[in-house]
Length: 199
Image 1 (tube, one colour):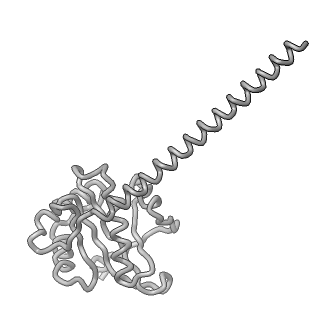
Image 2: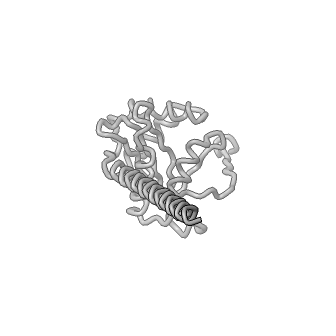
């Protein structure tokens, strides 16, 4: 019986050690996960801070229009080259209504269009993120998330309380990017009246 007692003690000690080791491994995994999360957050912030962006100029229009055509094709939006060029040129010429920012050191990683708006419901001035496009060769490096952070900073600089955008139902990937950045789904439909065709 004495021998059985020692065996039971050894067994209990082994179980305790096993549980302790498991707890330590779990804690290590938790620390590793937390460390990875901190690295990811730091990486996103670094990309956001490092993202080069500058206002588009008239000389940029040809290259900009090519990116805008790609944006419309990917998002299934009809592309009227003349109308888009006229609107883009007007925004470049007079920034009272907003801005077009070219992304990347070579200004070819994509573009961002922000416009100023006013709404009683939104508390006055708000900014519309009208278009965000990341060129295919620049994808997968966090530029989309960094561009959203850049858009939010610009909106705050303009005194806006809110930044809004539209996303098509057939583009869940874009919607996921926006919701991760903090945008909420207002569960509304956007309706449009073409004034030229109804005059």
